[in-house]
Image (cartoon, rainbow, N blue to C red; front, side, top):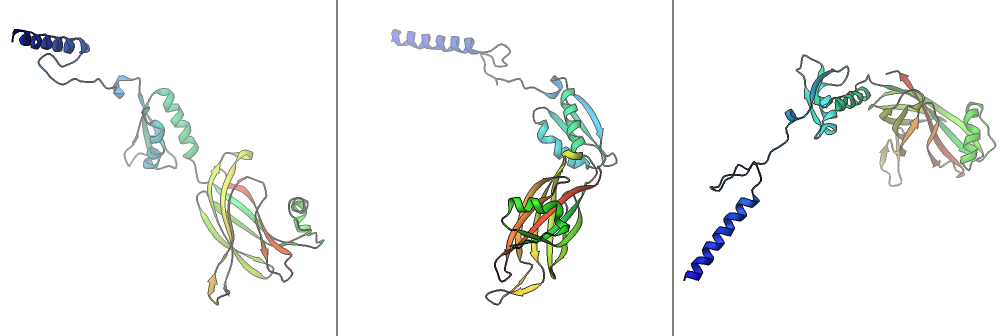
Length: 259
């Protein structure tokens, strides 16, 4: 019994020693119990400063939504009151400079893009249309047809993130263009626009099963284009009775309104 009591006392002493040697300096818990507390880093502990930045075009809420993902663990962005068109950033000075640059890229007036579309007939002839002189040699170099003829043109303006639908008359037939300018990046000669374009046949016609179809899509595409460059958006075969004709749609974008 004395041996058992001695073991119990020895174990209790060892447990007490272990508890004392594993406590860290500054622990709130003592021998009598209590919760251990872990210090946390607060914004007030860093060298953060606050700066209010005026906005020209972005709403206060949109500015906060834009900045917040970039400020994770680096700071915070706050909406200013509804009567003040601005956003307040609390972060390190270097981070605030980065956020000001980011705001400068997006807090801008809407960009309008002017688009020049050309619908071209490609045929196995020796046709050389003077209206296509700048493009003729390029088309012959990349496509298999020997003749190209301009069927019709369409000029349109579309705002950044905007969509437009317009008609284009080509070879006595009416087609429709539906296009969206999703993003405009850069300035001057380095600017680009991402377009999605659909070419549709207008009006009604009867399909193989007798059903009436409206505005069937001839082709649809998406492409990023440098401003001032002409690109081929798509080609498609057209049933002309000889099987040797195709339609080609090109577009040339330019900035219509400076930022």
